[in-house]
Image (tube, rainbow, N blue to C red; front, side, top):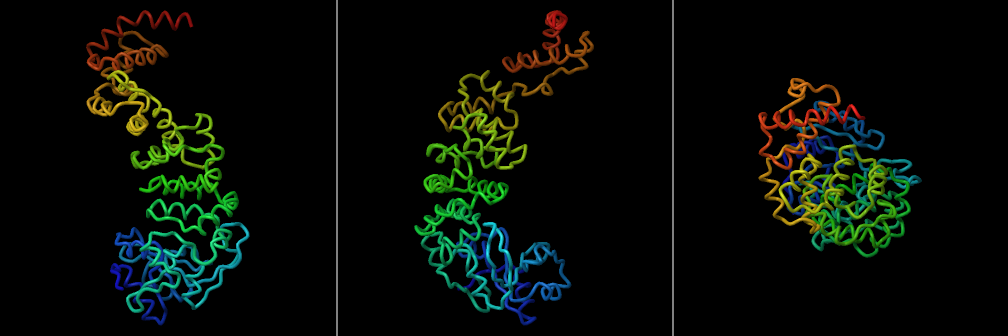
Length: 400
């Protein structure tokens, strides 16, 4: 078996071998190559100790990514390649990180510590493919299987449970029966995993083409409650997520659609997502319930949800709350979406005699009119409306 390795990677392999060390391509880059996909990045493993690697790559830029764990990042032709010394992990007491790491000269010992068989292969052009755990067979059969005893793998690092479901969603593979059972048995370990790490895996899963089946298995195995607490979406929601626009906000918003608004906020807060992800997901989940029929409905919807309106509109249509015709209404919509889109501004309001709060009140009133009747959004017509409404605004603020 021969795999095409790009030049910026092969020069690193050759350099290590010229210096008397072993070096192989491993991990997702190798897996994707074997699947006929273009890898997004490449990882390597080597017999060279970290200090030896620093010597060997003295003419390269080297970043000491995780020196105590034997990992360096080498920049080759402007591309980064992570290289790790063959190692054996010690015991795990925090369900995430090995308590100790010892280096080895044996590739087989390094591969034996890895999570799944499809990630436990190694390759270089001189030796070919090293596959001691049926990885190539599982790739062909479409199976995610733990290396060795699955309960041990998940007890060592509970995040591997999330990775199993994520790989299943990304690759469209089935999780092998014993591996799936062990994921369910070891799910309590997820309580010890940083929420940021869980959220990162969840996002990758939500952006995957086969997310529905993976999410369903997470629910059935009891894993979902460690992610979303007491909220559990229906299979209908699971089935719609991959049809949503490929943004974090769209996918999260659909996932949380069936939760109460307060619960959505709690979940997003617990997942440690960014403010942008939080506000966008909340807007999509809320907007998805809207029933849009007329041009005015769509205009107000676009104005209300702003940058998230497109994602929310898609959710509303997928859920059957709005007809697909609203897409056409949105495309043709020329109504202003905010005060900044009006043909007049604060200076114009000052010119007709308004001050302070009166200016904001008038602009808000004009925006509402222009959303319902976009043809009114001209300087001449808005100034005429403002002049007619000026007395009402002043009297209302005086009474307040």
